[in-house]
Length: 111
Image (cartoon, rainbow, N blue to C red):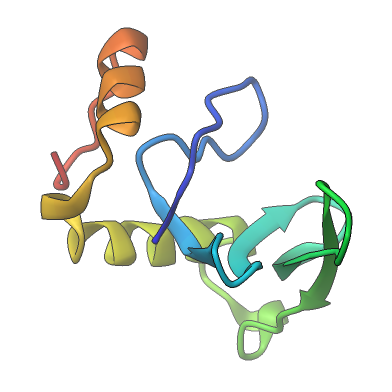
């Protein structure tokens, strides 16, 4: 699981949510994301051979007929994070739990 660790002033706060999958030993991962310029998208990360940094590319995601959505695309991204998180509440890494407690974050319906 790729657990979100951001709790900033941005639109979507990821701390305490499962936002994708990541395998550090294999050097690959992806996460479901949203921003105002790109809209909903998947960030794919991969280890660059011989370097410490990771490369990143993104793939745009169309949420059905986006013009006819009742809720904005950012809502659907958050909804998917919530569903993945509900399935993994027994597997929250200790560092995420500590940061949530420090930030006084409580997820309704999840924690």
